[in-house]
Image (cartoon, rainbow, N blue to C red):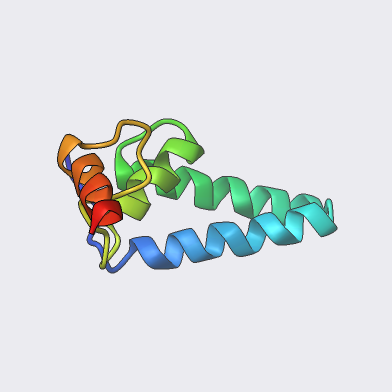
Length: 88
């Protein structure tokens, strides 16, 4: 599967969130149409079919993304590190 260059993703994510704010304040059809276009571009760029999944996938591919993320499943090593830090 083709993947978008990481330099493209920050612009798409920022544009999506900016349009989402505008769409909440102003229900204009032009804003809604543009947000749908950006959502579609995010889905294509990340290989997903849902804009929420696309935003999560983009966040994990952005520069600075770390292995310790906010996933539902916590890695074992991280949980042990938290317990060990509390004892120190």
